[in-house]
Amino acid sequence: MVTIRRAVYEDIPDIMKFMHEHWKSGNILSKDREFFEWQFADRGKLNMFIGVDDTSGKIYGMIGAVVYNKSANPDVSGCTWQVIKSSNPMLGLDLHDYMLRQLNVRYCYGLGLSDKTVKINEVSGIKVTSMDHYYRLANRDDYKIATVKTKRIPEVEESGYHLERIRLVDEMEQIIPEEELAKRLLSKDYSYIEKRYFNHPVFRYDIWKVVAPDNSSHSVLITRDEMAEGGKVCEIIDHYGDMEDLGRITAAIDNLMKEREYEFVDVYSYGIPVEIYEKGGFCRCDENCKNIIPNYFHPFVRKNVSLRVLDAQLKGLKMFRGDGDQDRPC
Image (cartoon, rainbow, N blue to C red; front, side):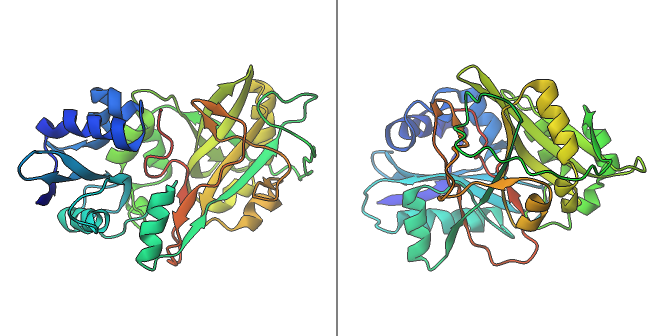
């Protein structure tokens, strides 16, 4: 009989082995226990749930959770969801439901869904869609990462907005108080944000305050560099605050691309009106795009990628590529 339960620390080696054999061979979560614990350990418990054979101890399924805040009813993203054939044909759904109950979840939304996860959700009657992918090219003669067949760089008016680096989480909290974060769907607290972006064990993030012409600041942008093929790009990972600012920072983005010799800046998001990006001089990358704006760098794959998400149908829900575990070392 397969029993579903919350994983404990003693299960970690078996879970990592299951990940290597049945989820993603060689992934950092399957070979680096320190990173595994950084991802899933939470106040002495693991945000990982497994289906285990009572007799043999063999793992038949798992689901992890990225928990965004420490409230009694936290918002979460499910991740690392995988099952193999067992005596329970509904193990995947049962694991998901068990996780929701154990964590007393308010909202749960994931991104970067696998084909198997898409099928499970479709069986449950949940619609799956893709995140919007927008990019802005640097004005240069050659591109080593992107494949540019149509070089289009829309002109935009100078807005007077610029970017300034933030190095401490307290600086970000002065711009966006935690009570403002709590009003969001997929509400994150500063304990999560500090761990995720300021103290990441592998990645280095640039955290920027968006500064208006009057020197006020109402939003924060988080970016990260990627390099391949002798080139470098800038990925917008997350954003907090006034979403209209995403359409006001084009000149600042262009200056950053020139200063750091980026080929392009791109962003994946859900729930941000596309008019904001288009007004800001960004171009859409979808299945009809002739240009290739890669998303996979470890290993590097020169192709356009759709990041699929659950279509929440909730007014006000916003997600970026930094949500869940999508922006994770390989």
